[in-house]
Length: 236
Length: 236
DNA sequence: TTGATAATAATCGTTAACGATTTATAACGG
DNA sequence: CCGTTATAAATCGTTAACGATTATTATCAA
Image 1 (cartoon, chains in turn yellow, green, orange, red):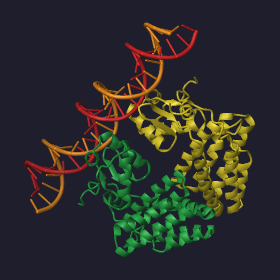
Image 2: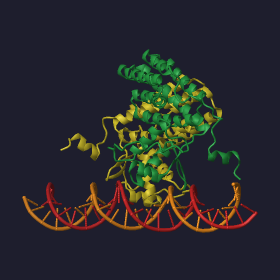
Image 3: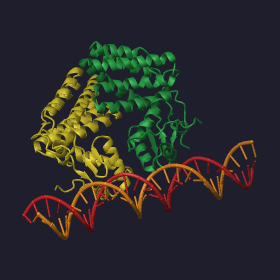
Image 4: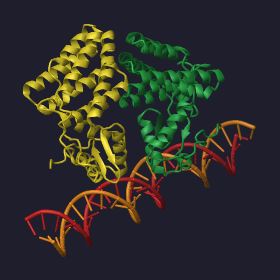
């Protein structure tokens, strides 16, 4: 079994509440250090984060409300395993929201925001050159978070962050070969369209970009985990 | 003081978890039976819903994560008082998402969905004739939920429900006269555009519709509650 | 009567403990 | 040796209790 990928995180806590735990698990999922169906036992999380059981349970509740974690009664918390149907919903929602965001970004043409995104893409390119897989994955997803950030709407921000995290789970489950990262260049193309003020092209590019990611998945070839078996083989 | 608007709800519980409490509070806020800044004390909620303190606290955490409730450390939970800035964000997010939804609805032209929405508008009209203010408010918001429902994406559904609930709080805080309900006819016009397959017109109408609601608000004339006074008059 | 101060009550956040269920381990028989 | 059953360990959900903070009431002086 893989050693618990959360242990390495030192506790530089300044916040007293459960958002810390939530964010750590968010990050671990986004960087694919936490695979779907991984058990998140309360005692482990307690000692990992050095907090009481209440905090852990509250954090798990929040994560469950966002579809990142699956709370099974009397069995425990597991990293969620999105179904193909849920995957469709996530991508559909992302297309709708992110298309709207880039449309508005292209309309307003905020120079500093564009510069920041440009800088981010450079970071992506550098990571790709070096070949740091984990870093590529992280930055690849983070670009979309930065897009939402640039729009500056905390509601959409939160939603997009949630959806991108779920996308990491989806890619982890259904991803093939190197589908974990966004196709290169497409981020730059999107940003170019935004910078050019071409709202419709920016929106289209984002949709196609997400469809490309979706196309790189094998929604049939989900590696069956224990829970699936009972569904496949019938209930008795 | 107004008698606790939650007492009248009988406990027809089938679900054992905290979503019940969440939904009840959602409904109460949407129908403006729970005003912003209302204190939600744990003992009251416990006896109201007949559950232990843990359930109540978990429900409040979920509501807080959605901006419906404000958890003040060591002071308790209060129905949220959105700031004008938050109100802008909510409307901005709603415009973006709902415009996207109606665009897709207009594109797909699902007959049964349209029929259902038509039926809903009839209910709105009937309530308007009778003059049932609370019912008008409820149906008025519910139309937008039904729009999201028609698209059938649970992610967007949840987000929209959240935003519409927050809109109720905003209208409760900044609303003037009869701004609590959506301008009549506009729902019907939106639906007509959808039925006609006119994607762009449907999107525009939704945006304008939400802007009309927003225009009916006095973002300056917020009735000051205790917390605002200390901000207005300085901290010492 | 009004305003400040002290004592009381209520509420909140957290920890600890208990039964219930589940999972892992060990003993046993085929 | 493998599968089954029984025991033991671990985990989960919930309740109860404790200190700490806050809100309320009562007391008193001006």
